[in-house]
Amino acid sequence: MVSIIIWDAEENRVEDTLPDEEQINILHSAAEILPDAPVILEELRKVAQSDITKLYQLGQNHFFVFDATMADGAHYIVRIARFSDPTELSYIRDKVQRECEILKWMDSLASLPVPRPILCEVNSASPPFMITSKCEGIEVIFGFGTLSEDAKIRNLRSFARFAIAMFQAQCPQQIGSIMRFSSNSPRNSRSTKVEIGPAVAYRKTETPSQCFSSAQEYIRWLIACKQNRASSVVNVGPILRRAEAIFVEEDRRQDADQLRCIPCHGDAVSHNILIDDSGEITGVIDWEFHMILPAYLAVDYPSWITYDGLQDPKFFPNTGQFSPFWPTSRQEAASLRQLYDNIVKKLDYQYYLSLKRGEIARLIMQWLITDEDREGEKLESWLDSLSM
Image (cartoon, rainbow, N blue to C red; front, side):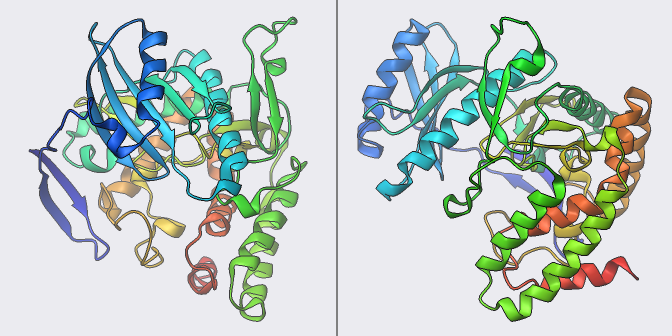
């Protein structure tokens, strides 16, 4: 049993326990879950040069996720893409390949706790899959609330090191997602190791045809996508135009350092960050929606100390994949954000400036990306709150 402390949408403190998950070794029955599993597991045996002794299923959402224990004691995560529409195969192959490429890039930055890519296969008869090392730890959403004060500070310092390493990474100055990473560049320059392509879209039908040259161009694309998802363009149009006008004002406030493009995770929610008992971040997982963005849009506060925009209980979507819970109270989150400001200001002042100057613009971007609030009603209420 794991004790947890969280806050609900009414901002009530909730103490609960997570039951121990029953782990069932499915090594000899994996084919019943996924017929292609035996072939893919054989690839793991080959690359690991060891036999599999245990296999547990961890998830079944966009991917079948398995935890494989080897005879030599090593653990590997096997992620196999799930899809039912054959027309999605090209999109999924591209998305899986690009996630492998960003993992290779991030793994080359020694300070980043990311899964180490072992094998990626997207062109075989089997569904696209990847095999990585396993990051141990508990999801921040469940582990942060019970940490001591010192451990919470350690957690913020750990996240700051991770975030600043990405902030300082050199890459081509385009807005999109990684296409290829190579550590054997003839010129041995970080900027030549990374090739950028169009952004990996959250929805196949919204995949752009090319990279974006500016933040305003990118936002106009997001607005067009958001408008297409709405049932009434007449209603949502004025709201989106209002959001765009505010974004343009914020974009014009940025200087060259904030406009420099850097990599970002794109989905660094508290379910995708793992920590240990001391608060240290032990893993940053699920990079499929990574982006290359201007720094003021790429950086952000740890999501678990955030009560802004979509993360404000007043505006939090009523539907979605995750329940509306926060690992900190609103008051503690505000205090921890101030602490995070002080930490990063000393470590990298340009990161700090990007963090502070991009707050409103980032929140607008997040509102446009989300599949919730299709008619823009909550976005409109949030925009109203900016002038209060």
